[in-house]
Image (cartoon, rainbow, N blue to C red; front, top):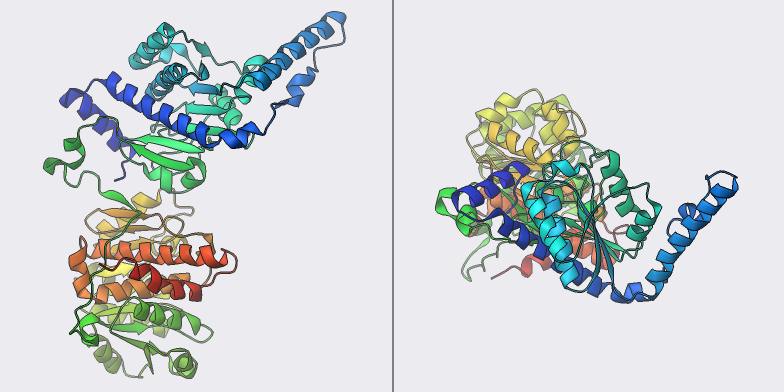
Amino acid sequence: MVATAAQMKELDRQAIEECGVPSLDLMECAAQCVADAVEELLDRENDARSGIIGGATFPVVLMGGGGGDTPEARQEAERERQKLQAILNEKQWDKTPWVGVLCGPGNNGGDGVAAARLLMEKGYRVRAFLVGDRTKMTPDERAMEEKLQKAGGVLENFCPEDSAQVTWIMECDCLVDALFGVGLSRPVEGDFLCAVRLMQDAPSFRRVVSCDIPSGLHADTGEVLGEAVRAGVTATFTCAKPGHYLGDGPEYTGELRVYGIGVPNKLLFGRENAGRFPVETMDSCMDLPRRKPNSHKGDYGKLFLLAGSEGYTGAPVLAASAAVRGGAGLVFLGVPREIYPIVAVKCSSAMPFPLPERYGEILEKARSCDAALMGPGLGRAPKTEKLVRALLEDLKMPVVLDADGINALAGHMDILDGRRALTVLTPHDGEFARLTGTALPIRNRLEAARSFAKEHRCILVLKGHRTITAGPDGRAWINTTGNPGMAKGGSGDVLAGLIASFLGQRQLERWCGGPAELVAAAVYFHGLAGDRAAERLGEYGMTPDDLLACLPEVLKERER
């Protein structure tokens, strides 16, 4: 379950105002989750830290230059040097872990203030710092500051010009990022930017735990708003946020942990709230049904593939092979006559044939099948694009459009809108931009995909890091499998073939929540096969053929 910033704001409001959950209880629970994450991280990193001796993290500061050449200036510089050296010496003999908590003036900062108190009670050496205007503190954060003071702590004002304070922060074993919550929508600046940079510049063996989302990261898009904290662990509350998965989010989020903090289940799962959170992560998948002993190839779908052109003989073979590997009973691969001899040699499980000259014969062949895939390696010849559009109008079965099959639709969206049968489009961002006129980069990929799928009553698979599958009913899935080793020509052909294979096996729809979820499952398995190939061969050397080789393995593991 994934919730946007606006959804989380409304969810918290309902929990507090309508369900009577005290806001301080939610904050206390969130703080406990952050404290637990810090404690676990420090325990895990203890061995790594124990072999490192504290040193001059900021040599420029310790040099104390720039104070002038007068005796008074030299004395002041020496006093400053001694003060900083004392901090470094203290860190060397103090075996208690140091934790610095940097808090903003909002409720996310309140989580940090409460976490500082809880960590103090656990025996850690903790200092909490308020970044920003103290007059803007929320009532809940002020309440948590009072509890911190009663426990013997202080919420200090953050002062980036104070070299002793900066040095102490940089010597911490763990930093807690509680600057901003999910509502940030503009670039980080001022003292907040200084605090973000402090957490960015911490030596690699130190760790940052972010509250809810790393500060500087847009919660809905994963866009870095100027600069952002790179967290080792992000402790998020109630639901994951799209920004944890999309854009640069995964790089900055680190290890994501989703904690319940007391929001009533009826607000999340109650019947009256069905469909309230239409976005999910595809980080696990459905089981595949065992095949009946008395079944035959006709029970598992007939596929029609229109693919290939001169110079692009690999794409149709990869797509057809993926369709067979995905379980399709019969795969008919129509290719241009001039490349048929090459494709026929490469295909052993699928059945390639040269495309007839007459459109009626092609249509008859396609109509005899249960699903169609058009586009891999097809080229952009006007005659070819006209063929794609004609078949799209005349076929009453599920059709998957990939690559040049998608390009053939540019300027002809009325054909897509006029279809009553299921259509699946699998563009990458560039193809999506050409199709829709959207500027690159796409700022909000999730909303762009959902809006397109709803407007055109189709399933859209927006490929890329964290591929998004969006259905016509507004539901969407963010895929969590896959790796950069799949960023090679041919990987998309494998995906298109697998999607078509699943759609052709009608019985699979009964094992999930409809065709959109079935398509999302195909995306998940495709990425999982890529992860398996990367484990064995590495991201540099793996190929789309290796995806095909690993696909049966990952599918077998999901058979009931």
